[in-house]
Each structure stands twice: as structure tokens, then as C-alpha cells.
Length: 103
Image 1 (cartoon, one colour):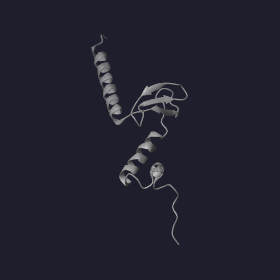
Image 2 (cartoon, helix red, strand yellow; image 1 turned 180 degrees about the vertical axis):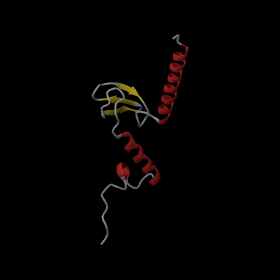
Image 3 (spheres, helix red, strand yellow; image 1 turned 90 degrees about the horizontal axis):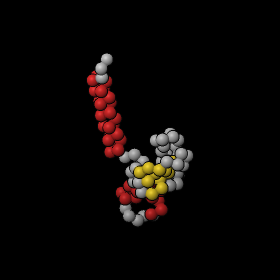
Image 4 (spheres, helix red, strand yellow; image 1 turned 30 degrees about the vertical axis):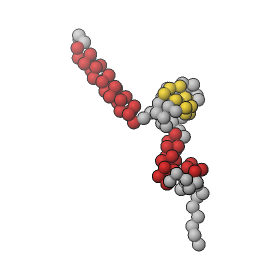
């Protein structure tokens, strides 16, 4: 007897397109929609209540803070890279200021 798989597991959210547009495009759409609808934590209050209002606009439903981010995720990989560089520069400046301060 044939094994039955869970309904919709293969097509995911792109199942609404049926057989149109090709497998690759449907898979890309499903991947993007999974990222877009995933749970994200707010950077201000820390609660997991981020909602995408429009393309690149995100809002926390708890603390009502609205900010811009990526089209499908609140923080893009490029944003995280820039923030690491900024924090590294801040630390270097603080260290330099401490060494120059009179004792």
C-alpha cells in the first residue's frame, strides 16, 4: 500500500499556484513567505510580536514601535554586518579615550 504524506507539506504556501510558474519559482516564493511570516523578537521590548505592515516596514504590536528593515525580514544580513562594525568602532574609540584620559 502506498504511503500517504501530510497534505501540503511539499507545496507549502505556494500550493495556491497549482502547477503554474514552475517548481523553482514556487519554491522561492514559499521560502520567502516562510521567512516573512516567521516570529521575530522586537529590538526594543524583546517580545516576539513583530508584524510586517508593508514592504520593509515592521511594527511591534506590544510596544507600538515602528521601524524600517528588510523587505521580508526585520534585520537583513547586511544590517547585522554594519551593526557589528559600528559596535567594534565604538569599542575602539572608548578604549582609546580611556588610555588618553589623565590618571
